[in-house]
Image 1 (tube, rainbow, N blue to C red):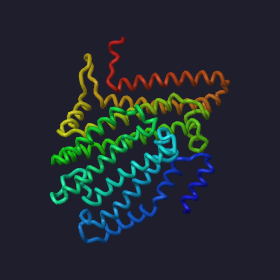
Image 2 (cartoon, rainbow, N blue to C red):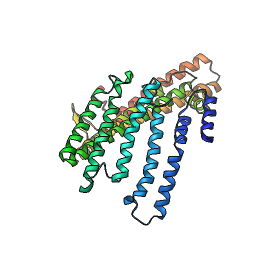
Image 3 (cartoon, helix red, strand yellow):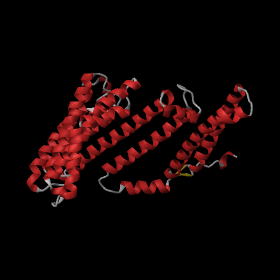
Image 4 (cartoon, one colour):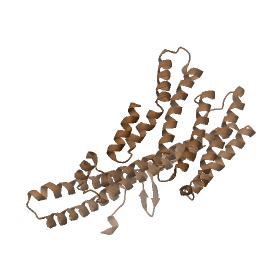
Amino acid sequence: RVVLDWCDRQRGRAGRPTVQVTLVRRLSENAPLLLGGATASIGLALYASAPRSDSLIFRFALAMLFYGLGKSIINWITGSFSPGTSLLEKASHNDSARTRLHALLVGIVLGWLALGRGWLTQVPAEAVFAVRTLLTIYLVAALLWVLRLSRVVPTLRGRLVPFRLALMIAAIIAVSAELAGYRNLSIFLVRGIFATIGGGFLLWTVIWAMRQSVQGVVSGTSTASYRIRSWMGMRQEEKSAELGWLYMVISIALWIGFAWFLIWTWDATGNAIPYLRELTLQGIEVGGNRLVPRNIFVGVTAFGIIIAITAWLKARLNRRWLRDMGMDRHAREALVTVSGYAGFAVALLIGLTLAGVSFAGMA
């Protein structure tokens, strides 16, 4: 109750919800589950004599903890100031999404409780085949219920249609394989489905947090926002090209990482990752030039770093160094603008050089 009151006071001071307050509030709402599960798990791990992974009471304690964490995340996603805020516009949309996600969470926790930690990745003992089949059917039904949320929420219509369709087909095939006795195929599909959803949710959350951070730097009133704007030589509500470039570079790196994760998840042969690793290090020949992805990544990273340094130099020039020289405002602004263009050109040149682009033919 003390934590909830603190959250209400912090929200009142800020005038709007913040990530920290909303997350703390959701966790505090499920504090009994989180504290009870964590305490019981730690106590059993330290003092239990039986093998912990095979102990039903230990799995029950961890199930409480996992359910509390999952419920907190779901309540945060379907609440205010979260990645789902722009998609779930009405309270009825939030309630529908929360109910469907809770049903999916219950299935995952029940599977852990009944079959242990490997129930999504390993073929169970023959004695529990029926239990796993029922759990798989329930999970797929709950997943399809979540994926059909676009029928309830208009803002979800037309978004990621191929992605949702592929997951639906894979889920239906997984149930069919489970009922037909092809449990290895069912395990592979179910594991891939939930790994894809988990990775996609993590990517979505990180990109949303980055976007909120950029907006906070541009228009925020906190001390941290003011210091970052001062460091980059920005005024409040002023757009920054350097900030936009950094956001773009980090977003590209995250999407590349997500694509790599999907390949690793769905590669049934185990050959794709070694091939991609070799391709990343050795590159391919294109028009007489060898394009090496590792070098391209180094070049893009160097470009982003130099852009950030350029922003800092522009701020120093405008606020300190040029003022000490007695230059008037217009001359300072002109020189700072030219410095920004020069910094961008240097960053681009160095980035392209490190990426392996040759300028020999331009002479």
